[in-house]
Image (cartoon, rainbow, N blue to C red):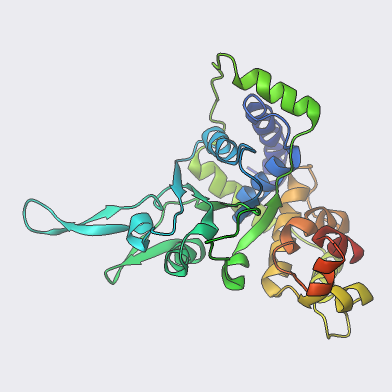
Length: 317
């Protein structure tokens, strides 16, 4: 099948996905779009929102309609690396046997990832980056496609272990979940306090998603779009010639080269689901907030004056 036909097929499949997901998830259109973009682009996503916004249900629903295996890990302060990776045990014949942990799945929901100590966070980091884990000196490949969708509660920070910048940078998107509108909340209450019989249809298989990811990689990008993306990231770095007045005033640390890579990959996926065969600057701008939000470190002055990360990023346009 030609890439043109494949893009057209992706547009149709994306519309079907959204329709199928809406049977269970009401509203949160922008959040679902960004999760699907990270899936098609082969990246991981961090969901930031208060409890009760259906983060787990959303991820479970998306994995079901994508036809992928799904595992949920509740991160706690006493969680050990072996609890997520797996461990070796002695079987009946006195041979060591590896029992796979929940990280061996297509989609892993890392619930409240900032509640677990750095040692366990680092174990997940290897899985995210290498698509493999090492236990007792042996390397085990993870199933493909592989995505980590982590959640973080922005309110309760007592007793948490903030994610290090290196790990935050491994997430393609940081997605902010907001409260639903009044009408959406009414619809949520009506749909969840009665009898639910919605049957979801799996629209993809694992190999189809891998093909879609390869298609996204093959999409050509004009030099001026690449230069725009790199220029946008360069502007986030204070104490450089490219930095704007707002960046110099409110930012301590800017985004690294991985942000430029993710901007282009996400822009390709964003263009493809719209039926375009090459991304333009508008596609880069459409994904920029989710890509840059967690890669820019605001300073005390920005916090004190209540300047939002969205305001800082949109000033770059």
